[in-house]
Image 1 (tube, rainbow, N blue to C red):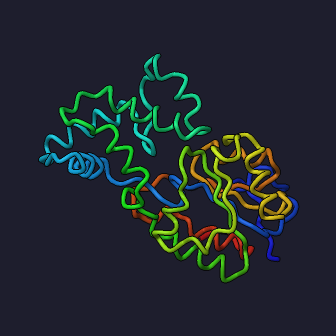
Image 2: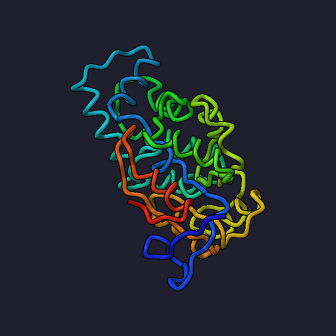
Length: 251
């Protein structure tokens, strides 16, 4: 197999040698896909409750809901004491994930009955997400090259239906989802589980993500590429994975 160049983007690798890449692990949110625009999120959620919001009201509500804490968005500025337990367990148990995020949304007085639940349902709907511009091409080229792929995500719900809706199911070989594995990134155990699913030595695996938690793969022995933040639907540098898997430094 081709080699991975050692360098700053590949924390934990030896600069004096190059390691072969035999598999790639991808984070989900912020790496392969992003949640929909906050205003659209609120407008669509309210519509599901039978309420039409004008853009001004939707913008105000979106700002308040983001401050409270949105799944796939910024962390809440404060977690109310009554939600502390489910918040801590949100990526390990689906009921805790739902309770945490509907509970946070319910702290905002929206004036729309049922909005907290409707907003959570947007998270479970593939229509509430946008794959990044480079996602499809990157996954397809890795498949064509015979490089197996796993998705490694801290998440409290099943994202396989999203990949099915986008036509990506056949492009992913394994799923290491925190609520199924019982471990969350940056715990090396979740990365090791993904490597085991692919039957590849971690020393020959590249983990691609967008947060320090993803860089925790270094402790499992994987090389790591951390991508910059990008808006929904935009290119986020994901195509650099193809250069690395081909043994070339990203351009």
